Image (cartoon, rainbow, N blue to C red; front, top):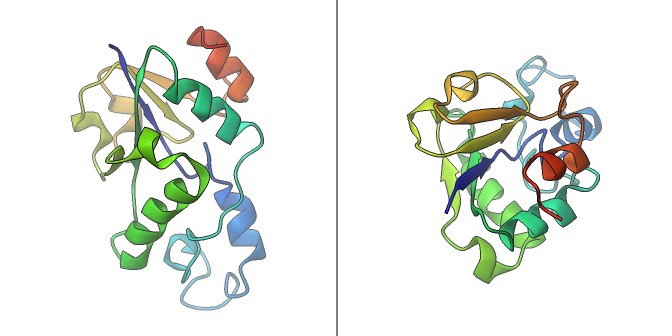
Length: 149
């Protein structure tokens, strides 16, 4: 069974919208460091089509894991990411499938769906599906590439 890692922020959860709407996003020490905003990860809106698409992946021929980087200086983010996936996906499908890691290139797998090259995504030894790129602008293009209906 092929392994697919799915990033959270910018792929499933709308971090950009969350930081724009956060009441402390324009004050020090958070200006330029939205990953440090208190509670930023807790209530992010899903990206359009993400929940439905990931549910299709979870029920497909692939083994799905959520692979995200949680900011070192915001320990609450680690818990909030766990709670976010539990809020949006069926527990039996996602239980123990969250990996928080700053070095994504160290994981073994076939595909990584990620919107940014940072934290080892661009060095991932499987195939990096660059979400939001010209080739993979949305979830429809990703599911089509992976042949998931």
